[in-house]
Length: 370
Image (cartoon, rainbow, N blue to C red; front, side, top):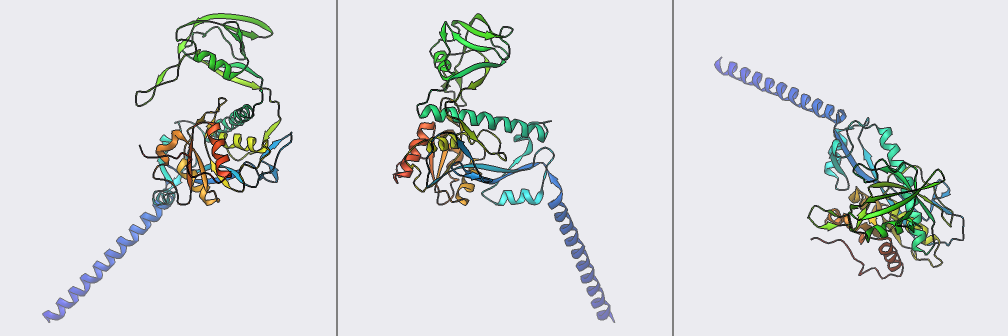
């Protein structure tokens, strides 16, 4: 009888353990299932769509120029980043988990990507404003690279805190002279200020409501130090944010509505140059890239370059133009089959396009570990 009771007790214990295990497994499954749909405070970046600046979007030319243009057999693709998460659009744990496991994606705490207390509508509005500015600066950089003269009115957008011109200048004032020399372009103004020592006395002439006024002030230093302590910049600055009104000698229209931000500037500029250049410089190659552009033709850093490289490969690119200032993020993250070329100016980028098109890309500069 003792043996029968022992076996019954053992069987009962096994059944109890099985029930406990089953309940635990069910609870774990329900917990994981819940986590998969519970919003998490992260942003997931992934490869976004690419667009050929020499091609069409929705049956319309992405870059339309009212002048004689030339056909190309290759492609110049701007690259983008897909962003999941942010104000009002939280991602779930499943999306975050995929972001951690997929090397083409990246996960960031939401506060490191977006400012606090900013709505998605405000973010979208700012992004579109940056895109418009990027298109104008790309057009200016491209046309001046091609040798065109682009008359420009330099106007005051905002007088910054600490500027010697606080209380003097107003929004909309047009800067017309500096030390009695005419201001003919933004680049010319910057070049002039570069040669003026900090805390020098200068006279600025402006045009306000059709009337000329002048102000004499001391300049601020334009020198800054980067994270390593290296001094960058030279000469003087006035402490004024400027708005540029361009009078383009060639009518260039860039039509793209589903992409924001300034990071397509370099590829816009290259697309304009290629369309206005008689020879087919791309020569059948698919070249992707990224980078902001300013009126001086400087290529600036952007975000999400790793995702952009993967998007480029996905869409057939063999070459990728990367801002030199993004090289630390490029090293060790280049997808197979992609040659990355580092560029710091529009002239660098155009030289790269020419060499790629002539099948002479082997010795082009690339990002390397420091």
